Structure formats: C-alpha cells, structure tokens
Amino acid sequence: METQAIDGGFANPVFDAQAVFRAVMDAMARPGTIQPCGGLTVPPAPLSPVAGAVALTFCDNDTPLWLDPALQASAAAKHWLGFHSGSPLAHTPADAQFALVSSPAELIALENFAQGTQEYPDRSTTLILQVTSLSSGENLLLEGPGIEKAAMLAPTPLPRHFVEQWKQNRARFPRGVDVILAAPEGIACLPRTTRIKTMEA
Amino acid sequence: MNIQATDIATYNFAYLDEQTKRMIRRAILKGIAIPGYQVPFASREMPMPYGWGTGGVQVTASIIGPDDILKVIDQGADDTTNAVSIRAFFKKVADVAVTTETEKATIIQTRHRIPEAPLHAGQVLVYQVPIPEPLRFLEPRETETRKMHALEEYGLMHVKLYEDIARHGHIATTYAYPVKVEGRYVMDPSPTPKFDNPKMNMSPALQLFGAGREKRIYAVPPFTKVVSLDFEDHPFEIQKFDQPCALCGAEQVYLDEVILDDKGGHMFVCSDTDHCEKRREDGHRGHMAPENESRASPSSSAGPSPRKDGEEEAPTLTPPSPRPLRGEGKGEGQHQTFEKSREAE
Image (cartoon, rainbow over all chains, first blue to last red; front, top):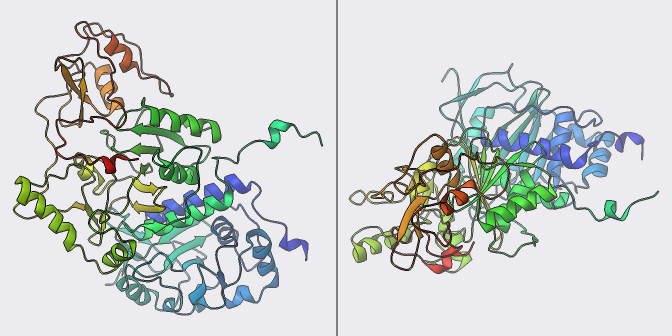
C-alpha cells in the first residue's frame, strides 16, 4: 500500500475527533450555522480535508460506508478511508450508515439511501456532502428545530432538485436522511427536521 | 523504551475508548435529528452502578473536550453525593475545568433539575435518565411502545392524565410530566419536577438525555417546541409555593423542604444552590437567613458549598443536614404522588 493511504490521518486522534464531533453536533443542533473545522486531516483527492475529518470522526468497522462513483474510482481515497477508519464499504446505498459524496451534483436520489423504519428512524443514512462553499450558492431559507426564527445557507454544489427532494425527505418524517455539508470554511448540517424554502418562494 | 508503569495504566481521555465514543456520538447525532426519539445505544459498564447517572456520564464523556467547563447538579445542588462524585470523576479522567456557576458552564450534567438561571446558546444540558420510555408504566412491552411511537398513538397517555383528573380532580403527575416534542414524539423529560417543563420549551441550549441502564439516548435541539400534555379544561400548571426561599427570599423558583428537627420544624430553600448563593451574595435575605452570614465568596471550583457554613451558623436552630438525603423527601409538600420506582437514577 502506498504511503498516501497511511499519511494524513488525525494527528491527535482523541482530541481531533472530539473537536470535529462538537462542530458537527453544534451544526446539527443549529441548522444554518457554520461551525469552523480546520484542516485536521490530509486525505488524497478527491476527498476533502473536512469531509475526511468527518468520516474519521464517525466511521469505524461498525458503519457500512457508501462512496459516490468519483470516490469509488479513487483507489487512494478508498485505501486511506480503509486504513484510518476500517469501515466496510456498503454494497448498496440502502445498506449505508454513512455516505461520502465528493461530487454532490451527480448524486443519486436521496430516496435510494437507508431511510430507517417507522419504529427505528435512526437507522438511516447520514450523507456527508463535500461542497465547495456554504455561502455562494442559491440562498436557502431554513426553518425548524434548532432555528429560532429562520436561518440562511447557500451551499453549492447541491444534488439535483435538492429543494424538492428535501421536501419529500421531510415528508417521510420521522424516517429520512440527514445531511452534513463539509465545506472548506466549516461544517453545516441539515437534519431531516429542517424545512427549506428557496428565496423566490 | 523506558515506559513507566504509570504511563501504561492510564485511561483514555474522558474514560471511554474511542470506538465507544464514536458509537455514542452517532447516537447523539441521530437523536438531535429526530427530536424526542429514543435512539438505542450500546451502553457500557461505567465505574459506578446503574442508577447513579451512567447514561448521563457516557453522554458527557463522549462530548466533553479539554476546553469545556463542567457543572454537575443533583436535584439542583452542586454539593450532593452524586454531583460531587461525577464532577470528581471528570476532573480525574478528563482533567477539565469544573464550576458551580450555571453561567460559566459549557456542559451541565443534571440529575432531575434545570438550573434557575436562564441557559444560553452554546451550553449543553445533559440529563441523567432512569426510565426514558414515557409509556413504560402504561405498556411494559418494548415492542408495543415502539409501535405506539411509530404510529404516534399516544391516546393511552391522555387516558392516564384523565384518570388523574377523575381521581384527584386535577392532573396529579408532578414530575416526569410527559411532553410532546415538536408536535411528534411524546418524551419523558426525566424525573424533573414539572416546574421545569416550561424551561425546556424553546431553550437556547442543547438538551441531551442519557439512560445507561435502559440504553437509550435522546435529544431536544435548541429552539424546539416542547409542550406539556394537558387538556383544554385542565391546562398544564406548574407547582406554586406559598412562601419564598427561607435563605434568599427567592420567589418563582423550585423549593426543597428541609426538616430541621423532630418537632415539625422545617424550612423551604432553593433547590438550585448556585442560584441561592448568587442571590444571597447580592444581598437578598430570606426570613431564616443567618444574621451575620460570613461573606465568604462561593468557590467557583468543586467543593463544599459555602451555604453549609452559613446554615450551621444559624442562630436558632441547628439543622441536622442542610440538604435532604438522596432519595428521601424531596419537597414532600409539593409532590402528591412520588412513585419510588421513578426515583432510581
């Protein structure tokens, strides 16, 4: 195995993972806020440092991980994730507990991922979307738990027809997927409870 | 190559191993995404028995970092056994700063109270939960209660509250009063007095609940609607006290009854010791406050509360113990029903 797969993990696994977790927890608890999360990992392309850090914080041998085709095609990224997290790869998106998506614009429909069951809605996929920015896309108005009145987020790129797909995801509550947006400036989250409105609406 | 024995025999930061923390963190994340839903998790054995807050301790251990400031309260008090032990535990295994001041804390682990001082954004309140399932005493089978949550079938809970009214003329549930979170899940707010239920609604702080023995984690994100169940003609009401705190004179706070002697002497004092100390520092005096209370400033670190000293100097009566004993008589005056089984944790 090439050294690329071994280098670039957390320098301080205990404290780095805690810092990233708190950023994700705060982002999930307050959708629309951007929680800074420095470059704690240096994964091989196309995996981004922030998405890599989130993956190492949550994934281990208990969590089937789904990779989008761009990551699937990169042996280096696969080896890096395998070496540092030990996660098995999910055969289908419906088996995945986490999904790492390096190019969200080409993502398959959200309904393909595990939605959980009505009895166990927690058994659904958490998607980690690698976005390039959280402020330069289309403005999304967010409402729901964790947001006092309304919050604004403008992530880009997003999956196709994301607002419509998210409406359907929201309608499945308590089932549904949750999204972690990993951008260079930090982490933002969209739990399934968040309602999205576009600014024109 | 000269590894000292002490280097080997150390715990991981915050006691839990990293894989356990990841498992708990994943459960917390799903809990936040589905407010009020009980996420099963693989609860670990902790170096304390079930019933002493193992659920809360595991949640705190999974979220705490070296920069956090921890406050631990037990029935509102910073100086009771459970609070002192858990605070000492985290000082030892995570070497974090601890405080008794609500405002300064970033993480507040609590057994059955919400502090009187308003919480602010960025704070995390971690509850120790004995029985997370609000429907458990109505339906003992987990398969059934799970289905009831899945189908949002909460009629039984309303029947229970109605039976209270039929029997007592009012809703007699005074603690662990069921709430509905964001219009979907009925949740047990842990055995907090119903006095604290309104504080959960639209709280700026994140609220996490850990039940170690029952292996469940659930959460209420900030700014989330938490509504106490009631009826139009019997609206939800919190306890009212007909006298202020005997030490600091505070009104509209939750009071504990403290027995002073065997002749019926008793006093009502703030359950929240930090709130009481702050008020007395600011010059507020209740009718039983000592005349010349020492101006000793309350320590911001762990340790016996200065309130104890104050009370021992009380001129007239010598209270045998300034705090009610664990598991006994917490505010008997207010609780009509106090099921022992709900007292566990």
